[in-house]
Length: 198
Image (cartoon, helix red, strand yellow):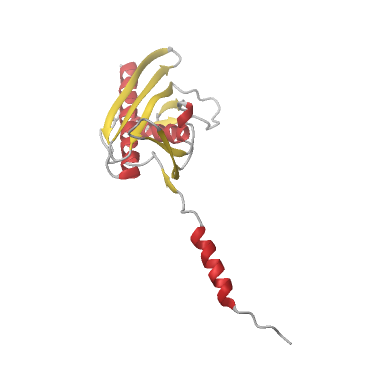
């Protein structure tokens, strides 16, 4: 004799398990947001002669060396967001976004990890984040120091980009503010390269 199974209890159990599943993570990137100004001044090059640059990995404080977004509460405590994450660890996000901006503004080619032989970068760019903090729906602040070194003359220009920005609109507002920080940093580095070239 065949037994007949009642599917209703199984459906209820499956539905209950689906309801217990944690919400999906949301991913953000800094390598977008071209509308955020100020835009870096464009350096024109003769056709077929790109500027060779190498954007080194960005150094960040250890607390920021992660994929999850990190915010500051009103009382100064740090809050790690479980669902809101960068598409890559923050140092990689910053390096890639800066490289993208510099290549666009300079008409440059970033040789970092390209494996091209016989080509040496003319401009080596190193960057260190001293401060990158945000309060949800309030503001973001940043201090990013950078160095541009031209080879083979070994000419160096160094500086720091500082920003205090409003960041309304939840996590999206924080990401938009950080994108503006990247754009301003790239603009400052572009100006430094112009100074070395002149």
